[in-house]
Length: 309
Image (cartoon, rainbow, N blue to C red; front, side):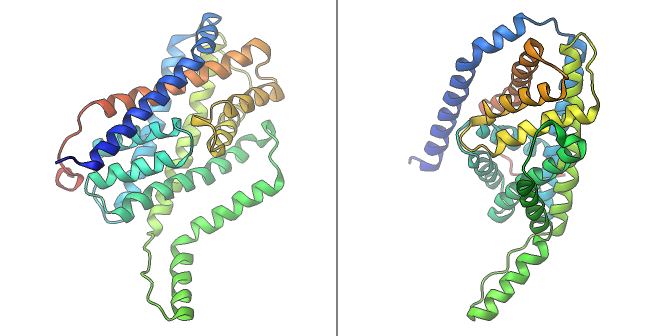
């Protein structure tokens, strides 16, 4: 008997591979030209890649701890596969695919729907808030952000971090007014704290990685401070993330990063273009390759609950 769920999943995986292939094909000339003009310091590039992979590990463990805060069990290897495969969804137009994929894959491992989807949404929202927080602390001068927008981010942060108490209070008020018995959603405070600590640390690691990467592309030395490079990386990344029409933030991130590099004077002209394009290649490889490996390798049949130690 045909499993329609399996058919739909296979079709989505095939569509995802087509999107990724097309994305790389369209931008390949820019990638090749950028690397042809460079003389990279491979030791520093390897070091920066290790920093990115450590940031990935922090984010994976962060998401895993949020799932555990919901009373579920998930091993790190299983969480790693789910995270990398679902992360490929960011290269499909629209930002909901990665969250939906993470929730679906987690449910396949025996995680409850509430914990699977809730943990995905919580981590993504907290990641957005902490990202802007680290960006403004690191050096918001590299990109002009309207004051009203920052006020909105601050308001989102207040609501988000107060959600474990605001949501139950709101449901109780709704029940009192309507006379109904709406199920009280459970959002453990620990889920918010784990997400905030882990995502903030990951953003800092991304900044360190980008500064080291820039040094590797600029004859072993990158001018400016760690705060400058952190802000130059985070600001464009977040702009690309909130641009729902751009798969992987393509185009939006590059324009913003080029502007930030020129604004600070850390890189201009050909060097700025080289950093913009090569950093995209660098992160694309580090994101896509592990995801494709996990996507194509048959996962274990054991559920997270049975394999958890």
